[in-house]
Amino acid sequence: MDLRTLSYLVVGATFVLYIGIALWSRAGSTREFYVAGGGVGPVANGMATAADWMSAASFISMAGMIAFMGYGGSVFLMGWTGGFVLLAMLLAPYLRKYGKFTVPEFIGDRYYSRSARAVAVLCLIICSVTYVIGQMKGVGVAFSRFLEVDYETGLLVGMAIVFCYSVLGGMKGITYTQIAQYCVLITAFTIPAIFISLQLTNNPIPQLGLGSKIAGTDTWLLDRLDLIVTDLGFDQYTTSARLSTLNMFAYTLSLMIGTAGLPHVIIRFFTVPSVQGARSSAGWALLFIAILYTTAPAVAGMARLNFNQTIEPAPGQYLAYEERPQWFRNWEKTGLLAFEDKNGDGRIQYSADAASNEMVTVDNDIMVLANPEIARLPNWMIALVAAGGLAAALSTAAGLLLAIASAISHDLLKGMIAPGISERAELLASRITMALAVLGAGYLGLNPPGFAAGTVALAFGLAASSIFPALMMGIFSLRVNREGAIAGMLAGLGVTLLYVFQHKGVMFIASTSFLGDMPPNWFFGIEPNAFGAVGALVNFAVAMVVSRCTARPPADVQDLVESIRLPAGAGEAQAH
Image 1 (tube, rainbow, N blue to C red):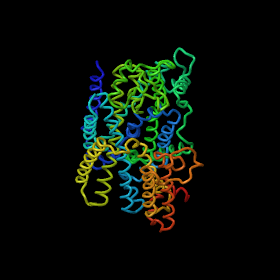
Image 2 (image 1 turned 120 degrees about the vertical axis):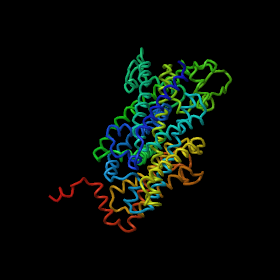
Image 3 (image 1 turned 180 degrees about the vertical axis):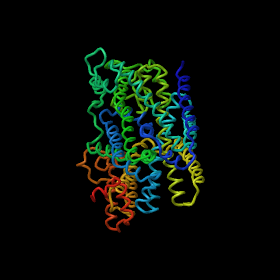
Image 4 (image 1 turned 135 degrees about the horizontal axis):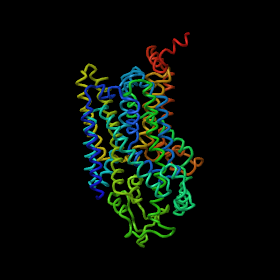
């Protein structure tokens, strides 16, 4: 059976599954719409959280970035997994103990201010909208390549699927759909990796295959990869770093605290019945995430090796363009892979020298999706990867859209504009808001803003600089008040946005001789996508200073903080 037919069958089957789950799990109350009724078990919630967390960036982009960055790509592995540990230990149990529906609701109550709640809604929407653009792009790319429809059509189909199970089911429908999507995406990611590892090393475990010898030789796979990339003029795959040590640290920290501050992940912990359930589901989620995250470096290294050996079968022997394999022709049609015969010899030269490099476009995102084709795996595996990529993008998009809809319908409408609205009217408003959010996300996917290329990392930076500090201080500080929280969130968000969208000369460091070789408008060599860590420090500092200069929070708010942070009965135990 040809690839297109198989892709339609596999992807179509998964879509039927998602819609069937949505019809079965329709939300009948606001509690079911916002937090799935609060009765989701830890294992099920852990699996749904993993799917919600592992977006198109994790499934498609991460291994692609590692494939071309090598060791420097470790910032994503360390940052994203480390951030989930922070979330599980420092935020999730306490927010679950608080027992409300949304992150802005907690911030509004903790800082006893409707203005603080409104600022939190603003931060949440900016972060979530920025993040959802990347998911929409992933949907369009996967459709355009594997189902051979244009980008716009693919995006519209993806919007329709998300509309069905998110508007009908809310968090309840999204939760059970995400469980199915996790099963699809993890199967799609690991099975091709197992077969490619067997091809290259005779080891069926990709994580071990990456550190094994190439089958039939005495050469280690990573040594072979290092040799190939250095012959082409690139840095060694196993030692190349991402700019400076400071930048690596800032980028990792930004991804970590950004992860812990992402609202669509946090609200997943509101769906379990207890604080213990929140802790347990976080552990299960880490386990489910680790399956993909420990496989990704192997996928990246093996994909880069196969990619280079396809273009340069032997040192100095380059592939003739007219003899390029079918996978190369297929991806050229998408515009994500492009060749320009600069010297007119009809052969493909790929090197680190930009002047002579004839692979003028090699999008990182093609590496995972094209990997089975490059390795000449069966068509059913290629179709499975397409379904997995779509599952990853759709699952995260649904979680983000629910976070946006909840913030608007529950926090703005119910919490501030019309507090007396009935539950039935609020549920209707939630569904209408969700539908509008889907349409808005689709529009941004069809007409992405100029900064869309870095949307995923930017979303983490914005969450790190705005939401995470407010939550941390709200749980662990009795002194931070509403004035401090509002000023801190606005300062952190503002300085990060300013740095990202700065024009040449804004925040310019006058003398850069002691900073080394770097773009003149980078603060101590920290790239914009890593600046969320600096924004978070600004947030913390401004909030602390302003709080010290203004009145302490009321006694009832301090009691609220104590009750969230301390286990039940702790006071009585200390008294005895």
